[in-house]
Length: 111
Image 1 (cartoon, rainbow, N blue to C red):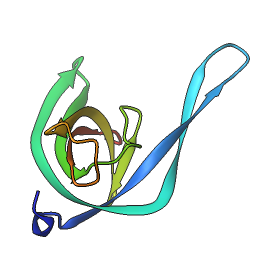
Image 2: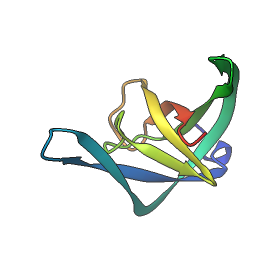
Image 3: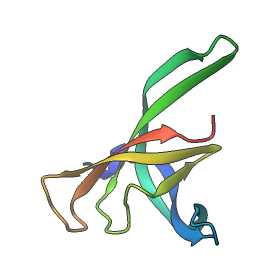
């Protein structure tokens, strides 16, 4: 990807897993000090009725960043006021190298 296409800045949030006495897992996220240049694009929005009372919806974003080894399916990205949960990871050209690129399919997790 050309560097000029990366015009947005995202922060990577890493999860910390906690297991309580009953075995329930909870995750807390800490934002790393590092900010990453990215190309963020809203690719779809869906609205649905959950039951007959409450509306629900899903917004999906495509985020392109340079290859990193610390991005997993548990990773979240902070983009402005949005928190994006990683749902899909595509390693473009299968390059596990800083010259490579990741295409992340993300959903807004704070709707």
